[in-house]
Amino acid sequence: MNRLASLREFLRLEATAGAILVFSAALALVLSNSAGAEWYLGFLELPVVVQVGALTLAKPLLLWINDGLMAIFFMLVGLEIKREVLDGQLSSLGQAALPGIAAVGGMAVPALVYVGANLGQPENLAGWAIPSATDIAFALGVLSLVGSRAPSSLKLFLLALAVMDDLGAIVIIAIFYTAELSLPSLLLAAAGLLALASLNLAKVRHLTPYMLVGLFLWLCVLKSGVHATLAGVAIGLAVPLRGGTGAEAESPLHRLEHMLHPWVAYAILPLFAFANAGVSLAGLSPGALLEPVPLGIALGLFVGKQAGVVGICWAAIRMGLARLPDGADWLQFYGVCMLTGIGFTMSLFIGTLAFPDVGYSAGVRLGVLAGSLASALAGYGVLMVAARRRGSG
Image (cartoon, rainbow, N blue to C red; front, side):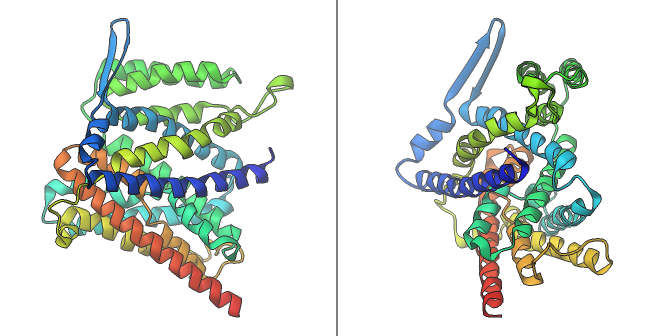
């Protein structure tokens, strides 16, 4: 499959996944506010035990989803980052300039907005990173509704920006959301990283050794205090991009990415959304959204994201450091920048790390859902207005 066909397949999968994400989140909301609430909570608390000899892992299903299945999602993120940096939209300074600059503004300003809304509540400041990342599946799903009326360059910009956002979120999780560390587990994890690097340097093209070492690395990271999903990123970055010769000519990275993408898009992310988007609205008044945590998240996503991305991009373009995506005008660009406020998957995930206390979960989910929905509706509306203006022109 050539590069253009791979990109089209990627965009198609992400757009479809966005619709499935919406359905999964809506189903979780319906169940958690109906007679099915008890079944929904029982499903999430279902104990799952895996035992190999003396090694036993016992966790409720919710944590297996968030720590285990999401590690596969992060492995795909690692693969996508490596592909884009070495052979994609981020492989040259000119291509990476605008999305890279946009990612900086799109992470810094939402964090500042959240902190501003929670200055009087120091215990809430741990959630500053929740509105910092973009959900690429959801955002591309909304953009796909505009169809060919939006230039393809805007889709590439949004994709590259989301990749940069994911990279920033990975760094944030590694630095700021790490629990107490276990030195023996960290040393074993370091040995796993060294083994992955050795496989890459030895030009091993078969995926099986990477997956076996990766499983060992995931177990070590899980026990170390560092969040286990970061092991998935390391595995993805270790898989070689270039193929060998003869039967090994196909890129191992492309092969693994092609295998994982449908599973992540159609199973793992919808299951994560179903498990984490359910929030009981019982007893919640409209004023609940005005409490510091949900208000900071919602404003960070809806106001902070668009302000940060548009503001820093406008300055960069005026200074000649970057230029608008080909064929796009400022109104279309603004509409896409509004879509970056769809935080959903990554925002919910960071929320579980920032506030493991169940007492905060309803506020986090309420803020993420409100900010993401407002960004989706407003971004789609602006893009449709821009399309009509260009059509009439």
